[in-house]
Amino acid sequence: MDALELKDLFTVAHFIKTRCDHGLKAGEPKNAKNYVFFEVEILDPKTRTQLCYLDKVEPSATIGEIKVLLHRLYPKWYPARQALRLHPEGKPLKDEDVLEELPVGTTATMFLQDLGPQIGWTMVRT
Image (cartoon, rainbow, N blue to C red; front, top):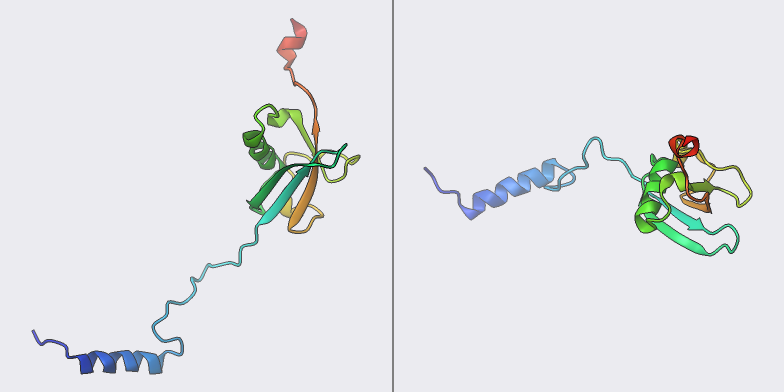
């Protein structure tokens, strides 16, 4: 087998560079998107103090998923106990609402209302 000389390697690299305007760099993947993440700030509605700041939340995240993330930080507030609102006196958001479909920018400010302990109907009937 013939050994390649340095001169031959230079010729191949020069050929590729002259034929391709980007040289030997890899191109962008075909399905690459400029992915924008949301930031969610959760405040106390009475004092307006920050309870939580969630960074890099996916735009397709639902309110239910945000409640689960909040539950990981504050275990006493399980998702059924939380009501998230866009305004302190506004209507609570539904668990099915998608973050990118809400009237907020890339930084969403929400207000948490603690609904208290939630009990099931089996506890009520007995």
